[in-house]
Length: 234
Image (cartoon, rainbow, N blue to C red; front, side, top):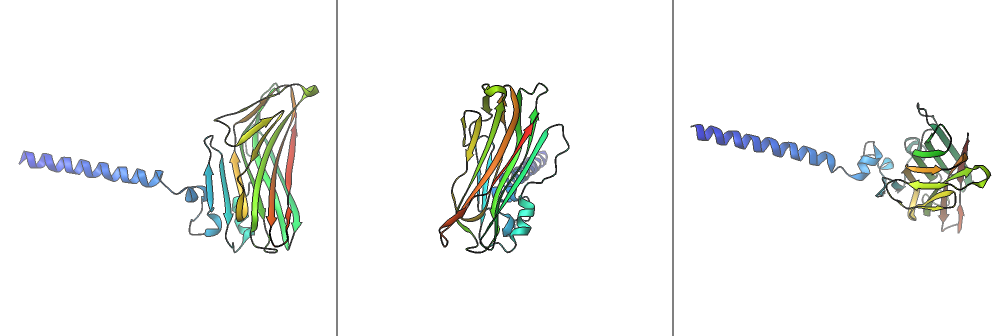
């Protein structure tokens, strides 16, 4: 009788362990699309077609398909212009360029930590977007590409050192500028990028951040390239 009771307890323990393991697996293995959209995945306007997570934590995504309401979608996707409640400096910029029956735009929102001596500035968190909001010459761009850059300016042109935490993640450094070139995307209307961990050190007086969206359309054999840019001075 005692042996039977012991076996029941063992089976109960094993069943409980498997139940917990299954629950954890379900949470940890959630689709990248669902995790990134942070909305009802049943809404195709808010689930990206592609998500790339780089080794350093950067995330790139793109949206395509025939979206019913692009304006409603970008209200969820694009970064907020509201400055976060923190001691860090914040930047926000947006550039709209008329094209076809609507417009294309580029925008970004970021926070930066500035040390008290003004000798280093770190981009702690940033999000950039570029989107084509029209339906003519065609609903989606034939191909689109997103570019981000951060430039640290120094007093008297003094040297600046730039570090990229967690590896490059597609970033390159030349002189005082860190640049990122997004993957070329086809048949899409929106591309975005989240990043952070970029630090510039030296005799700094300003930092300039910019994002550029490049959209091309086969039917018109032309493109539109909005660039958003803003600087902080200190």
